[in-house]
Amino acid sequence: MAKTSVRDLDVAGKRVLIRADLNVPFDANGRISDDRRITQFLPTLQNVIDRGGAAILMSHLGRPTGDPAKDASLSLKPVAERIGELTGKKCGFVTNCIGPEVEKAAHDLKKCQTLLLENLRFHKAETIIDKAKKNPDGKLTPDQEAQRQNFAKSLAGLGDLYVNDAFGACHRMHVSMYDVPALLGPGRRAIGFLVEKELKYLRDALEHPQRPFVAVLGGAKVSDKIGVIRNLIPRVDQILIGGAMTYTFWAAKGWAIGRSLCEQDKVDLARELIAEAGDKLVLPMDSIATEELYAGASPKTVRGELPPDLMGVDIGPDSVAHFVGILKKARTIIWNGPVGAFEYAPFDAGTNAIAKAIAEATDAGATSVIGGGDSAAAVEKAHLSERMTHISTGGGASLSFLEGEAFETIDIIDDK
Ligand code: AMP
Image (cartoon, rainbow, N blue to C red; front, side):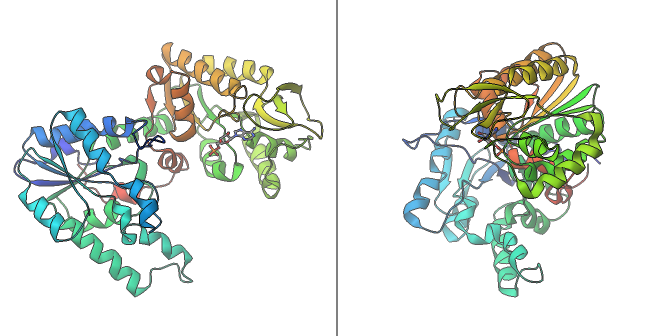
């Protein structure tokens, strides 16, 4: 069922609480090093203020620890400044997200103005739901529940309408993502353009893919990707495996893996996945290996099994050629996780070759969806972002979506 979009809300003269994902990275000098999450959210903000709404923005940034000295670097103030620069209109900022000062600023906000609240996670209540897992009955204690409710009421009281445009947080049942829209109630809840776009690309790929449909899954751990592999097996034509995950699968086949990373406790599971997927699961047949992993370490190409002194840190040239051949014919491609230790040149060659092959397939008409996180960083590093169909702003959220998880934070938004 389609969800109400921000464009369906009558925002004129209303205070619109927008949950955005403004969790941007900063460089060593405290400057925003990649503002994609801000720029991708601007169409929603612009839509609200252009139609006479007053926009109150909420976001998290990083993982505050409660230590004021460390948390000072997690203030959203520089983000307010960047929004002001990008929109050419001042973006107000308050040093908290609840409390009398915030209520006054929200109340005084005029139509077409924007106000950004300080980092939601400076209040433990925002993420308190995560504590439920640690409690013996899997539920919050009455005190934790009260903290959650009070925080939700304080935030919800700031606005008349609610827009979820924080795709990167959609897999988390945090207060600003779920309890606030729950409290605001029907007729006042919508998704923003970024969430709409992210869901469309991921859904289209999973539900109506043009074939051949190929997934490339890399990264460090099989355990992180089991859910995705299981959910994709019946849907895709092929799953290309890369990254350190390779060696857990090789161990399952009885191959020697030298000193490569391997999750010993997942070897049986890897064997099950190989049996379940049959020909669909394509494993690398060679590696770029090294004795120690650091930038500039000398690479050795090894076909097949690895000797005891080497670790495999990238897919080898035969695997690259095989994968590129498959990607060339693909009409829908999903990529999640680098196929090698791409942070350490020259062990980025396999990942770069995959990024280039996906860009070329996209140029030739395929739809490519890059699942955020490290794969998005690799595409960016290779200057290929513009050539991909869609690069997700949410690594964890897109992974959860590919696992087939239903997002309750989206379910709570009103149907169209
Ligand atoms: P993930 O967070 O699971 O997507 O894993 C990404 C990380 O896996 C990156 O930091 C890569 O450097 C790392 N990685 C990928 N392939 C390998 C490999 N063969 N050996 C060691 N690390 C790897």
